[in-house]
Image (cartoon, rainbow, N blue to C red; front, side, top):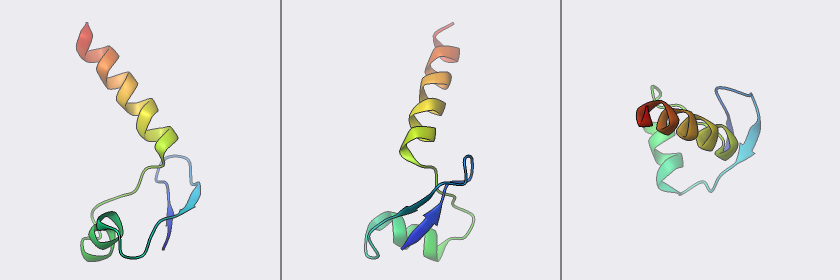
Length: 51
């Protein structure tokens, strides 16, 4: 399954029968973020919560 990151518009391939693919197919409100964007956002949130 081809998915597109909502932040950087990078297109990635995920397994068709993975739980993430099923979640994205069945509930269109859920969005996909690539691993780079996911780690960047996580670091920013952790840094903000630390202060």
